[in-house]
Length: 517
Ligand SMILES: Cc1ncc(COP(=O)(O)O)c(C=O)c1O
Image (cartoon, rainbow, N blue to C red; front, side, top):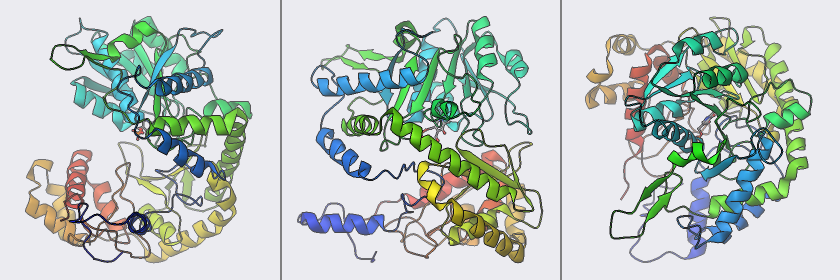
């Protein structure tokens, strides 16, 4: 990238080939989405030709609007087929325990979860102060749903040993106002499957809906089971499960923008809809949050499933399973690292057992070696950890990971623990989120090595803060420069209580999100 100004709305239009060249140059600053070295954000099956197919499918339907299924029956046909495929995979459909299952496509896991909570809330209009109950390991999108929908959030702890909630704690936490109990299959942070069978039975006993968040790994679990993995029941085969979500843009390997939300029957789904006829325009009937919906992601997901087929997903799950086993073994071989959980799905998550082996420095050292992992901060009894989302594309790179991990560990030990300037530590210890003024944020940003506005950067919103471009590259127009090494930032954030972390990160991200002219 150069610092040449490129307004989005130039006085005169720019020729198509130049525009594309500019886009490619911008993309050059991103982390590589292919190549099997990125362990978060991107789900890559490394299937030759799939990108071309999905790009063509996306383009064919990009301008079609899902707002009105009668005007664009192509989208309705594809949506119903995708919902049917997800239902079949997750224990529903004709001849199963959930023959009446219905569902919709949403834009992603967060939207699916918000709608599951909305359906539960509006399905219980008699409850005036509705509550949602989840394990603390449930995805943050549940907190977002609770926040947006003004539903109170109750949490139960997870055991530091199993990383799962105790069903007895769930039973004790269900209140008369609880409209939904949710759990994960598997959880994002650690990749473990909650005791869904017990939790769903408890919820059913109390007449409360139970949602299974299978957004992350739900598409792989049935395949892993077919390959011999001991996957417990987690889906619509359990009578107490009233809804379940699975993201096609994760392990179904579809391009971004598609998740499936299933309900056991149409009555349970009914309160998910929003309908409005009390205005002079068209009557709005929306099953999901968005009204206008591009057909692009739907068509791309349809093309992905049709092209890969059941056999394709089984083979991709086999590759992923081998990759997970190889990566976990590489971690086990390192003195001072411990798997936080024995892998039971597609996540490898480890922590440090040795104070001289700083996890955040290790993440930086892996980045320098071309491996992008995701730091996770300490939480309650749970130590800080490093998360690896493993996809099929990782399989060929596994042999290279072990030696690089060993080298990164040696470099981390040589560097010693992160030392933060004393005034920063004092600030973190004494600051409350409300006291965080723009001036203080500016001091922290500079103190932590973030540059001023002008060169762009990346802040990982799904966990710890990811390191900047290891080549030290500038990251396009707008925002602030993210330092190459993030250990200091992550150490500071790790030391801060969650409310302060949230506030600091909002301020950091807000600094990045400034218009360019
Ligand atoms: C278990 C789980 N649920 C929900 C979500 C939210 O999905 P999205 O980022 O597509 O909104 C994620 C994302 O990683 C997830 O892992």
